Amino acid sequence: MILDDIDRRLLDLLRADARQPISSLAVALDVSPETVRSRLDRLVEDGVIEGFTVLVKAGAEQNVIRAITLVEVAGRGMEKVVKRLREFPEVRIIHSTSGQWDIVLEIEAAALAEFERFLRQIRLVEGIASTETSILLSTWKMR
Image (cartoon, rainbow, N blue to C red; front, side):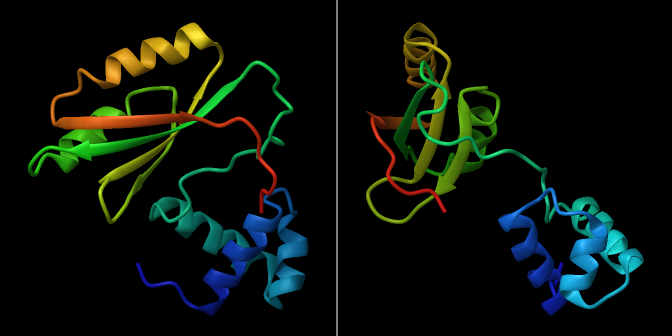
């Protein structure tokens, strides 16, 4: 799908505050509310917008364990590995990368036992050659 200027501006506005009413988005974009609604529907239908979520301030959830896991994929198994990683509820975001590691995972677990279980399971995924995980301790800047 090709995004035009209005689509890109709409996405920027939603990134800043996805709770904005359609009427406010229409004013900011200088288009009708129906145009905003139809573009939103199309962006969702085409998979450009995969969902709407909440960003929770780092540290607001005291017992949540957050981590970054670096993954090296063996051979040409990237698609199978990514498909399998999507099945883990602890995996929040999957990034493909350049350099030594093929994938960077953003992980979130409710407790240390859950986090440890995830680490044991991910090491068994066919196609993963190696991993390295770092627990996130503090976050100083978000957006």
